[in-house]
Picture 1 (tube, rainbow, N blue to C red):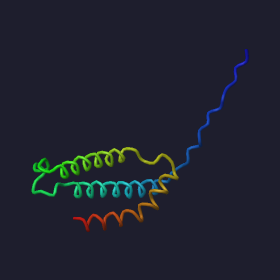
Picture 2: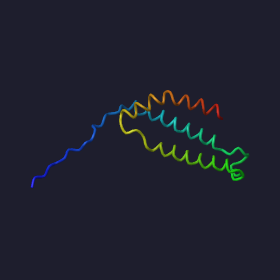
Picture 3: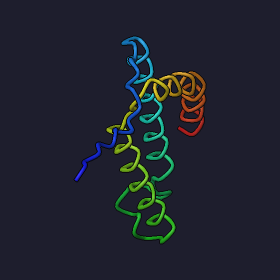
Picture 4: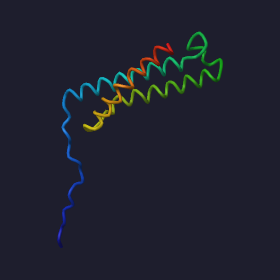
Length: 109
């Protein structure tokens, strides 16, 4: 009986320069935190306090969706890119998306 070994189908790990890794991680983290702050601001109830969200169903629904969205964004912080291409994508995307997200945050606040 002959045994055949099947080679593993893995892509070779590409080396990521430390500068690229740090820059992309900072931009990605800044973008996600800005989205969390924007989501918190938008999902706050229209009433005076957060405890009055139960008075209107629309405020309660907005608050629940905002909490779910913030939990999802925070979970994204722990799942970073896995290769050099992912870090390059976040570097290029972050250079455009972070200023736009900050402008939106200041406009909404």
